[in-house]
Figure 1 (cartoon, rainbow, N blue to C red):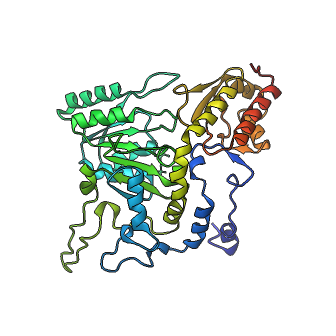
Figure 2 (spheres, protein in one colour):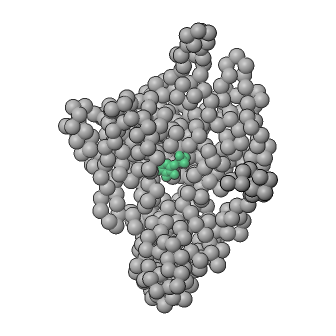
Length: 402
Ligand SMILES: *Cc1c(COP(=O)(O)O)cnc(C)c1O
């Protein structure tokens, strides 16, 4: 309760990041796709001041997506082309994209269908938009799949319950629990048959692997710049197809009742403008790299399959989710490491600590029985070091290796 003394405030003067440093391998699933390119790191400094992208905002039609210096307007067109949809906007986060879509394509009380492996922010976005959530069940262990058939059944269940189709259907392209790649194209077709807008959550896919919004039948595609586009937080991508673009990007109709002021150029759901500085600059600066890197996805999948093969040599250890892997995020189940943890003085923390000593971080401290990792963007050398480290730790504690 000492007040904001200089001593207390000095803590903020020289912030240091502990786990993101060069020389450490960070396996945390949310970190791999968000590592900045050198170009983005330079842009971050260059555009670090406040509203840094707004210097040349066109005075007659002031809006973020119309700025030409830096080339925001061109970037948004290129972004839409990259995702093969009609228009794109940058928003603050993937979750904001979902909220914008929910609140503009559905009305309070409507049902929205989501997969039961959706990110928690999907549920909260629906809640804030005052929608009712109906979940598509997933299959049991060890695969936990979400099938188009289960979507069909959930749509029918909603129609029986409410007398009409849901207002919107959401599918998590790759989920954050098992890294399963879903049959988006099939769900897209189903939505077209039912005449329901289809929102594809590409937080873990667009920006790291090829994603064609039109081919997958997405009316709305959302993604996360800080998760998958080598950009700083907060950045999100909201891309829209022909059929919904106008509804989602509806212009303002409000009028001040005393002044008569109005803002017909502004897009209401975006509250006018969204990301007006450094994070947008990083997203743009990394874009050439992102366009190129999605072409190397197959190699990324080879690396994760290799690591899974090595980890499964360890007694009592297996990969959960679909086999073979089609994404670099993996959930590992290890009865072996769990057994070690029960007798270890550091309990579950031993695994984190052993890995840390070998320069590897990002496995959640304390977890051994189930933990997640992501190999995206690691070199073969690094993947081999990770594999070797796990095997070494297993040997050290007497676990069998096949
Ligand atoms: C990480 C994640 C999000 C959150 O992205 P933000 O940009 O931080 O909002 C949303 N959905 C899924 C599936 C995710 O994995």
